[in-house]
Image (cartoon, rainbow, N blue to C red; front, side, top):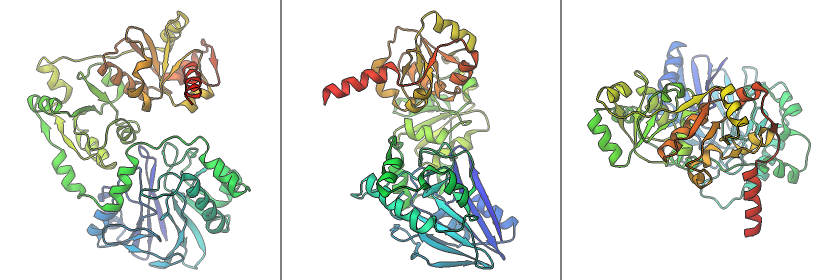
Length: 475
């Protein structure tokens, strides 16, 4: 028996390769099929099944293409109704892979078709569970992603409680837990950086598995749950309805554009997406470009900040064109008109205008703040409420476009996030809106804290308090 976790950090997503006696199964594959086919070929195995734990919302799965390429069968759990050929299993049904078996454990709650796959070893012993978005390390799946149902998140949380109590917790403590996601995923709210554990460890340390009533569980898992990214329902719909072949998408979207054609696409409504590292972007970028670098949670932020289906033109580092397009396709962003041939160098060589973002050290930032220059913190509310610079203006990055009215265009700001990735995205949004008097802090709040020269406090930021007062008055 052989099990391998295939973890993709930018999506915080885990797919799995399971093999026994020359037969293999893949659980929750990403959209590109080549890595799974190559691994099976390398190990001289044939992929027999492609198991899907549920209709994923945070990425487009590769199950359809992979099943075709490998001549394998797609398997969903009870209640799934895909619009393409797939086998919908019954609860407790067994699937044989060489000398091992996969047992279906229907575990509704994250979504109603959510299923956990229990791996039984050669002797029939419970070895591991592949939990998808039902159980994470340190957390459980968010119960608000069911599509086209009349179920509330409280209803789903109640189903999740029953699934954990009756299907997961009775399993032996030594069973290995292989979740669908790790820290950084928006499919939960408190995930660990660890990507595997044992059920015994989770029984001890996972807040959602502690002894409590159903009502207490529902309150615990729904408390503090932020809205999911806007692209989630679209990805869930695609995974249920089907999609175009990834190779055709790549062939169509990997199109070099000369400057004139690039400008025509922008004039027709395309968003200029610059995928270079923030430290490179700041030194020279195209006007009206949005910087979301490949080195961070690129696809997640694209899905959060850009409308689904929006036409895109890309600016990349040389050699990064294919990666930029592929990672967009992983989350269903397929309307890429092409990329700037020759990148920024060709733009500059043609005498076209470039813009810059001013970045400063933490020592310079501390001095400006001490001199009364206001700060703009684009971290999430939960981050700032743990600790923030006194009197900071907090606008989470995901809300920035809709909150421009809070920003004075004539005022200078010291801009930061936790480490510098999100603040450069924010800087690109601000300059596209005509706001240039911002100075981005290298290393962000984490580096500022180490300066130990600023007054840091916990609790809600002043603008959060003001907004809550306004909301209370309006109700």
